[in-house]
Amino acid sequence: MQNLVELRAIAKRYGNTLALELSRLVIREGELYLLTGPNGSGKSTLLNILGLLLRPDRGEVFFAGEQVKWQGPLTRLRRQVTLLHQSPYLFRGSVADNVAYGLSLRGITGTSAQQKVAEALATVGLDGFQRRKNTELSGGEAQRVAMARALAVRPKLLLLDEPLANVDKESARVLEEVIAALPSNGTTVVMSSHDPDQGERLPCTPIRLQGGRIESPPGGEATFLCHQMPRPALQL
Image 1 (tube, rainbow, N blue to C red):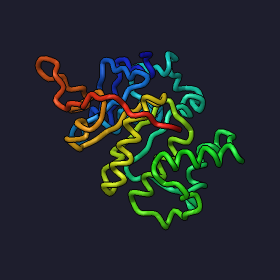
Image 2: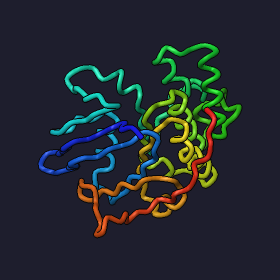
Image 3: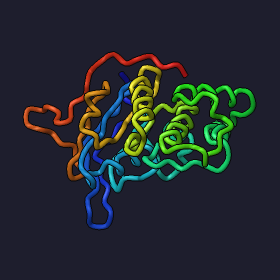
Image 4: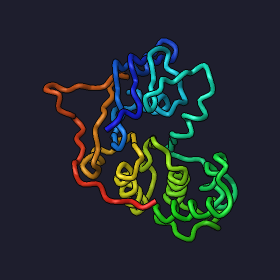
């Protein structure tokens, strides 16, 4: 597997508080990483740095072998990464309008956009929801629409910040299946979670943060284990 993102000697502070300090972290293509740790351990800071949304105070960031130059525009690189928050914001209007938003920014419109919207909605189990209004959705359906919006642009790297924390069981089940299948289809995933059972259900590599640093238990054994199993196929 090739390195998709590499962080070298990264540090980030908020005032006098150290939020993150990593000597090296490599995110490889075609992998699912489960990011865990207590509140304040640096998970959100790490996701924002990986998403090229937050510049570290020191250190180097490489994306697909290219060093990130924070002084210039990062639009080209940022369009290869999508960050989905725990409580995603949906725009006014229809589900189709929401899912097509990222496509329109990339100049994809018309029949091609409609097809991609339909495929993304089908992937998250929301066939035929195109004309639904955002105000007609349950919390779980809204999260699935947000996931469809992320999938429609086919990012190289998908960052998920507690995506299953506030959804119903059926939506959680559907989203877990989608997430598990993404690496086999070319999307690398880094997902934060507080669910101690998440790793038992997903084929993943664990990253545990404590006090802004990666926790290395005695003997190098992960404290938050991931279930190793064949990834299901996903059609997009």
